[in-house]
Image 1 (cartoon, rainbow over the protein chains, first blue to last red):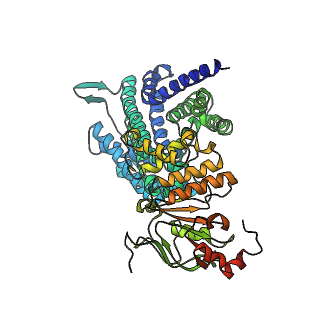
Image 2 (cartoon, chains in turn brown, blue):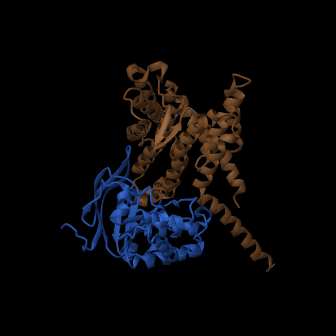
Image 3 (cartoon, chains in turn purple, orange):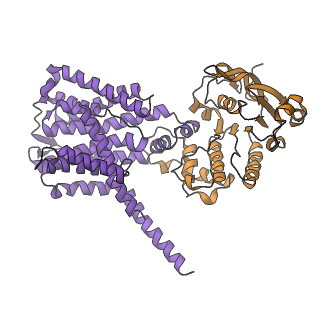
Amino acid sequence: MIDIAPTIATASSRSYSWFDLAKRHRVLLASIFVLIFPFVMPFTALAVNILIYGLYALGFNLLFGYLGLLSFGHAALFGTGAYLCGIAIVHFGLPWYAAIAIGVLSALAMATLIGSLAIRTRGIYFAMVTMALAQCVYYIFYQAVDWTGGENGLRGINVRAIDLFGFHFDFINPLVRYYVVASFVILAFFVLSRILASPFGAVIEAVRENEARARASGYNVVATRLITFILSGGFCGLAGSLAALHLSIVPIESLHYETSGMAVMMALLGGMGTFFGPFVGAAVFLLLENLVSLWTVHWQLFVGAVFVVCVLFFPEGIWGTILKRIKP
Amino acid sequence: MTATAASPIILRTTGVSKMFGKFVALNNISAEFERGVITSIIGPNGAGKSTYFNLLSGAFRPTTGKVEFEGHDVTNVAQHRFAHLGIAKSFQITNIFPHLTVHENVRVGLQAFVSRYDIWRPRSTVPGLAERADELLALVGLKDRRARRARDLAHGEQRALEIGMALAADPRLLLLDEPTAGMSPEETRVMMDLIVRLASERTVILVEHKMKLVMGISRRVLVLHHGELLAQGTPAEVRQNEQVKRVYLGQREH
């Protein structure tokens, strides 16, 4: 007995540090995965899509998974980023990097606007208010035909090459395009990880865990929610901007509530409140969409079925369940 | 008459009332709370104790009347500001961060006074928090529980943790709403000892249902009944008060 106890203790502490080590280097691990990802995918364009929507779900998850607020209006943030990035290129002829910056900044501004209006409500009311406001954004972009192309979407976002620090990247080449997008996603991983590990990350956790206690402890819950909403909007705006560059068109559907719902589904599928879960959710969602639609047009039926099974039997999502299993 | 920081009166309510719809939960309560002592608010169930407590701690705003802390009107101050003013509280129903560890619970409580909106630095680099959290855990007797998840603690330990979190604000005024609710006699004894120890350095206002529990440790006692201030005074005066006797008559003194 005396001999066994220390052995167990050492073993468990060693395996704990293994898990802990992985957690500490989550950005590195996620980045490595992203770098080898296109070689396990059936085609590169799909891999780019997964990156972009994974980033979108990642931003959504900051609000939904980490703070515990369900927004049904994130399409407005994704779409604003996409449209403004596209408009910067199509109407103003700005270079790609300025267009991305404008996309992100405009999404931050949109998040500030929607956030300040919606943030005082909670639960289902918050979901409804964000959805209603996102629909307003949809109709504004829909009506501004001269700027957005209206129903036809914004066309002609032609970025053929990425020139940076004397290097020339051929943006037409799918793999090059993948790695350009991947470098932004890796940057987003890094920023998100910093936010989560920061003092403000602790405040986000505290508000999710117990709002009343957080308030009594001296935290401004409304301000915390608003800042998190804005930060979340920044990630989604970046995803939207990359989508505009990737597709060279911004379809009006980017702003549709289906796009909002997609973020919810991806985050839930992958595992809300986990670092890598939204990415897994986006991959599963888009893989199903692409593979199942090869033999039936009713692919949504299958995605729906997988979603229901997931929510019923793996409420922590795919990645969340895996983490729980391997956690020592 | 305005009280300053050095004034012997730390908290004052002037004619506070609280209505919920047409129901009068509290009616025109004026009272002063002395600095540096334990004051208890007692009364039978439904007397309005918790409503009064919530007015003192900023959780509710009074329908009419004024609350002053150290001479400043705090009636309309947002609740999260109270901790920064120097007023901390524990809730009647245990209120902790259930999925965080015991140590993290207190650390988050401390962080509110150092860093609230920093999104970039690693939180481990905020100096002094971890050590101070350990000190507070030692003070409330939870040192050996620091790595446990808060929800896995025993009830009495959770209550102690909540007081540890309230102390993170280093409050001049500590408000405790039935800190021994649901506790075993042994846990109750430990908690009362802790409260007396804490009161040596700060003002404590205690809401309690069990009259006998607080009589020994309180300098002053307020008795509420049906939303009215029935009596106030030293424990001896209150115990002799005919109206108080009548209210507590019939129900066994706990």
